[in-house]
Each structure stands twice: as structure tokens, then as C-alpha cells.
Image 1 (tube, rainbow, N blue to C red):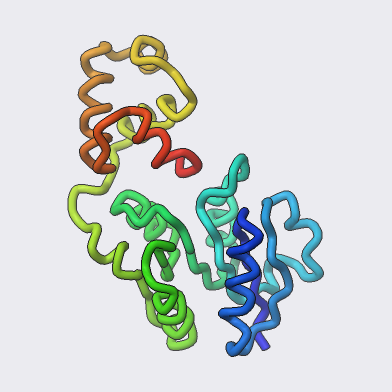
Image 2 (spheres, rainbow, N blue to C red; image 1 turned 120 degrees about the horizontal axis):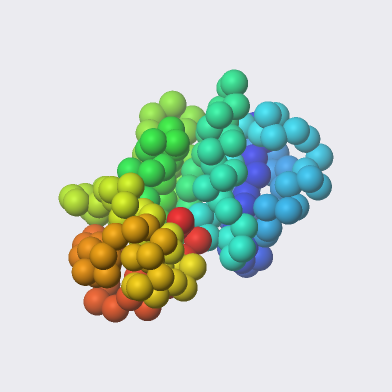
Length: 196
């Protein structure tokens, strides 16, 4: 039996995933709703073979957990199960050596496909991740601007913080909105909260 941990802030999703994974040879050692619950796991993180992790966990930082797991001497399998199947997210996950990506808006069979790919040692990206290709990568400056927007800073505050003009900040905002396919800054913030 392989050790598996599910990390999702919605208890009903954790329960549904536990049921969905019952036929597989997994010992589900934890269904966590907050990263602070990691200390309650009955085994060390290095003893977990596969993690299923949602990117958005309220105030918790899934990206930090994924980076820590990827940096282990023998990294476990990580299935990112998220509502954020954008090209930018895929690129960032790929840089962290995440090989299994499933968008929650895709059918649940996509999760089964990712689990089967894990057992075969092959990478897998669900259809939303595969279909959302193109100009999804963010520049370092776009990432900085996005992070400050998510923190609630105004255009003038961002310009002052980054030592750039307000027009330049607006240009970055327009570029970010195009990449995330939104038309309002509020939608951009809503769509990317928890990702930066």
C-alpha cells in the first residue's frame, strides 16, 4: 500500500476524493483542510508517496508546500487538483516538477487518468490544462504587479513600490487581464487570489 495525503480546504471534496480513491492501493493517511494540520499526520512527509493538493487553501500557501515536497531528496508524486488550469499555473507547476495536474472543472475521470499516469510513471495534464496553451507565462515584473494587486494596492502605490510609472503599471494590468481572460481588475484578483 502506498501512503497518500489529500489537501483541500473543502471537507466535502476531501470526502469525495477519499471515496473516489478507495479502489486504488492507497493508505490515505490524512485528509487535510489547512496546512497547519500537517503536524497531525501519523507519518513523516517523506513517507508519503502521493499528495493530492488544491492550490487555493484560504490563507495557507499551497505553493510553498509544493516547493518543499519537490525539494525532498526523493520527491513524492504530486497531483494538483485545482480550479486554476491556466497556462501560467501549468508553467509554474512544471517548474516545480509537478507532473500531474487536474482542473476541478474537468470530469472526475481526469483525476482517475492522473492516478493511472502516476502508476505508469507518466506525466498527465487534464483537458483544461492541455487546452489552455499559449501566452500564459508571466514575466517577473508581471508577477510582482499581480502580487501587489492581490494585496489590494492601488496603481499609484504599485508604481511607487516598484519605482515605475503609473502608465507602466496599467500596461502590466492590461497584459495580466488578457493572460487570465478577465475584463476587470476585481475579476483578476478573484481568479488569482491564492496563486501568488
